[in-house]
Image 1 (cartoon, rainbow, N blue to C red):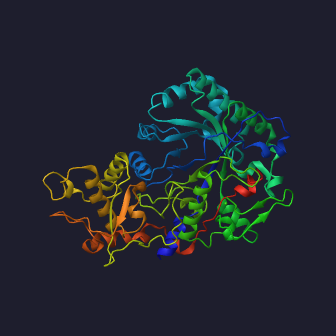
Image 2: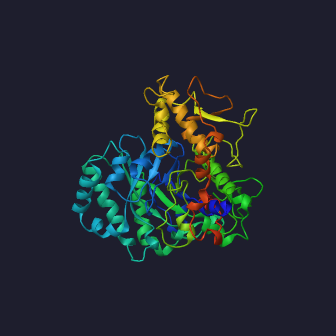
Image 3: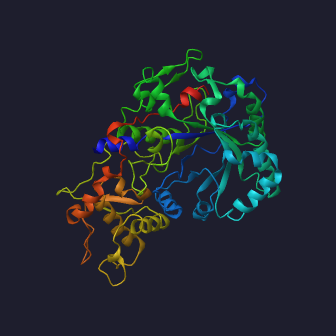
Length: 481
C-alpha cells in the first residue's frame, strides 16, 4: 500500500549538528557540554548528508544536479571520493569530506600519510570544489575497534598538512560523535560528557577551541523517541507548540525536542523537517541561548539499501534513488507546512493546472532545472529543439516552462513536481500557444500512471514496518544552552 511505502521511506532524518567553540576549554569535563556552543555571527545553515551505501543510486554528476535543483548549498560526504569531488567542482556548494575510521591509524602515526593524502586527494580539486570541513573519524566511541586515542593525533596531522598548504584558515578540521559521548542528557541543564571518554575528549575540545572548529554530533531522534515515546509527545518532537517541557533545574521552558518503528506518516516528516529548517535559519537558538546559530545537516539525501541494521537505516532519504522527492521540503525555511503532500492547491475552473518557469527565478536555476528535467527527469524535450513547435521563442524561460510542465504532468501534478528548487511556478492559465501544446495530466495518462506507481520502489518488508518520523534530540542534548 502507498501509505506503508511512504512511511518506510520517510524515516527519521538523522542530523549532524555543528556547534562552534570560541574560547579555550578550561572546565571540568563532565559539565563541559554547557560551553560547547558559542555563537559566531554567520547564521545557521541547513545542509544534507550524501551517503552512497546503495546499489541503485544515480551517478555523482546526476546527484549534484539534483542537489542544485533543490538549492541545497551545504553537503556532507563520508570520504574523499575523486568522482564525487569532481562532480561538485564549480558549483559553489560547500562540501564537508571525511576520513574514515579505518584510516585513523595511518593518519595518526605518520605526518607524511596526511601530507600525501592532501596532495593527492584534495589539492588537485580545490578550490574548484569548495571544501570547507574535513571530519577525521566518525563516532569512534561506537567503533568495534578501540580507535578513540587515534583521533586527535590524526586531526593534528591533518591540520599540519593544511598549514603547509596555507589552507588551515579556509578548511576546518573536526570529528563527528554519537550521543554515546554523553553520560546524561536530561534534564538539559544536567547534560554531561561521559567521564570515561575524557582521555580523548579533553584534548579534542581544546583543539577545536584553539582552531575555531566546530564540535559535531550525529543525532538520531528516531531512536530517542522510540526509547522514550511514553514520556515524549509527538507534538513536542515535531516542533509543534501544544506540548512543552520545563527543566526543573533552570525553569527554562522547552517546546520541542529538535528529535519504535510505528506511527510514521509523510505529514510528520514534512512537518518536522520544515519546522527544523525554519528553526535553524531563523537562528531561534534554545531557551538558554536564544538567537545562537546552529548548523544542521539532514540525513540523508537518498535511501540507501545496503546500510546494515534495522530497516529504518535504509530508508531515511529525502529522495528516492530515481531522484524523485519522497515528500515536499522547502530548504529556504520560508514556506508554509503543506499537510497535503499530494494535493493540488491551485486549480483552474476545469481543475487543470500547469507548471511554468517562475518570473523571479535566476537563469542559473532555470538552466539547472531544464537540464535535469530533460535528463534525469525523463522528460521528452524534443518539442523545444530547433524546427520543433515549442522551440520559438528561443529563450531559457520558454524552454524551461515547457520542460517543467511536462515533468509536472507526468508526476501527478503535485506541489513538489513543480518545485525545481523554487524555479517552478504553478498557474491555472494554459501556457500553450500556436502549435505548441503544453501537456495536461489527461493528455499523458501513460506517464502519469507510471509516475504514480511508486509503491514498487519499496522493499519487501514494507507491509511489516511503518517508520516514525520525529524531531531531533537537541533539547535532550543541547537545549541546556
